[in-house]
Length: 207
Image (cartoon, rainbow, N blue to C red):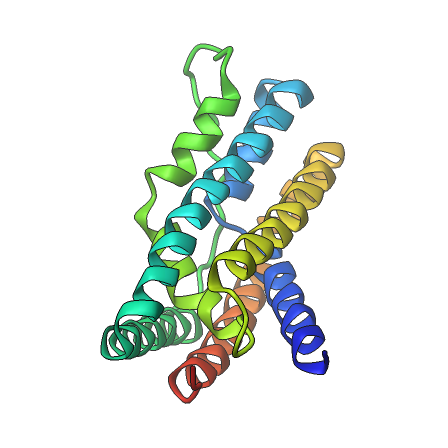
């Protein structure tokens, strides 16, 4: 039971940190809220969550099959995932961003921001790569990869949606805060350090 609680608490902490770090999803929600309105921004947030679920399903079924079929293939995936997280972490530490641009688009208003949110995540292979490299280390030994992957993705989606609602409710002050260079550099370096720690944990983990 303790291993299960430890996995859930550690993942939740990591998911909160990753969600708070400004990225494409944050930019989409803030931009939509500022330009199109709260309703459209909420639709975009729901679409982003649906995109995470699609990637989560792909990872859940693929990861479960991989673990069942080949220990060697799983080890290769594990080390590739650790290398990817290390690469992300080192880049964030050495080259933190100086600005977080929330672009103002001249595009005509869209009636389907949910679809934009879905496509924004589904067509981004980095989301899938990140899930493959990040989720396996939080699955306790002896537990179903399928069930746990969906469960972890659901936690990530919930945290992401709550953060999106906060962004939508306070678009202007949060957008101004997230544009500050010191904030961006601190968040990138903090996240980079966490990535390196998780990369080491993944590399030395056992099935």
